[in-house]
Length: 198
Image (cartoon, rainbow, N blue to C red):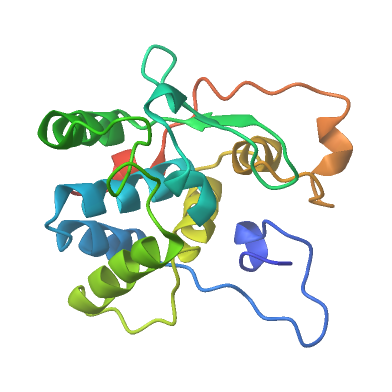
């Protein structure tokens, strides 16, 4: 994937001829998708994915122990490229996760069906159903939540190196030259979920 947008919204290097820009949801569209999702578990899958910029296999593989409420971070284990990382935990997402836990009392996996991690197909269907229910016609996929997270952080003024760190990217040409000589703190980063009107 090469680009997230144009102008000040650019997150990836300019696209080569023939490559396509990813679909991005507006903040209002993300709000609508979450609001029409009535099932608590399904809602929290979408909220956590967007609020932390997770890939599908990352959110479905989360364990209860990966939610670090003391540090307000989400631990992502063995992500793409077999690398672990931390990303931000939204206060609003944490509040909703606690409601979900009180109702469902999951065992090992945060989102399980029973005794095992949620299937990819299940998560994809949750998103597709909520997208349709929200009346959004964009050709969006579950991964669009991650693209939207990155773009909305950029719009909030978060620097590219921090966005790269949160997403777990290792080869963004526009930012990799800075990452190897400087360290960045993500303590002050606010999840875009907490800027929505829910």
